[in-house]
Picture 1 (tube, rainbow over the protein chains, first blue to last red):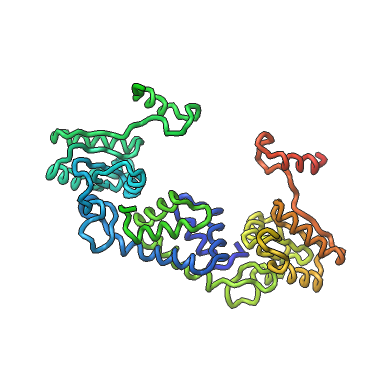
Picture 2 (cartoon, rainbow over the protein chains, first blue to last red; picture 1 turned 180 degrees about the horizontal axis):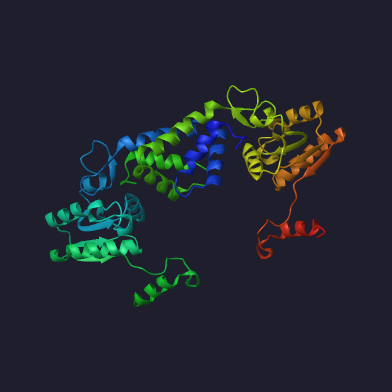
Length: 201
Length: 201
């Protein structure tokens, strides 16, 4: 691109490496940065530089926490319900569930799903610490909240099998039509699940 | 968000300030940064910090250029066609036109459009330098390539009026159906323009 000064080109390329950001969006973002007061790009740059060094993993649930703290805020919160344990794939899933305000139990983050094709087995995930945690202090119920995808289902089945000897209640999030959606646009699998899981009105 | 460490929250907020990036995408990007090697966030941070100080405006066409250069690469390129001058709203428009590979003339960047509602008059844009430039060295044709929007059209009309005494050929980009599109999805205005501008096959 002959018409682009190098520093601008470098910024576009850096934006392009982010997930879901293509060349067009990357250019738009880079040119936006040039139009705005320096403070906006500086704030983002500083946050980017700080995030890795200031963030650690909670040794109990493996969610992200601030460096130097013994455990994350959810694990440290004595008002949370110890009898419920929700197992999720990624730290972002904790955020999403917290935003609903509808869950008051504890979490465990696997940091991925089983995927033989990509070489991800149980040892690449936080499965062993989960089993140890559950054995040491069994909750009343374990919610396997991995994604409703092929890998998420397989991971949930594997975990159920591993935890079967413990005799705990093991659940999975409900599947069906998204709230506010339209039957017409639902895919076949979702519709089949919604039918199978239909409930008394 | 009780479950989010502060540095991560700061990064999400910084991403949210970018155009077209809502809270969900901002969270996704911030968590992605944590999963990736530090080099990715560092590259982006450094590009963000460098871009403002290393980029200047070309004193001829007002496109972005590298600090310390007398003019931008397009203005400095003696192979470009001096008889064509394309007037655009933003530096990004130069990039978009350059990517087509179909234009070999010169550019002039207005840095905005006339918008009385937002208090943008001719003096807030690079209109005076454009008129001086055109008077000093009149091109054969001026392409007013502001956007096909209300403000873009008004700005083009204003410029035509200002340049009328110079007796130059003044053109505007064609309007019609986008290539590869479907009549069915075209809006009424575009369809009317496509009809009015129909051409002999």
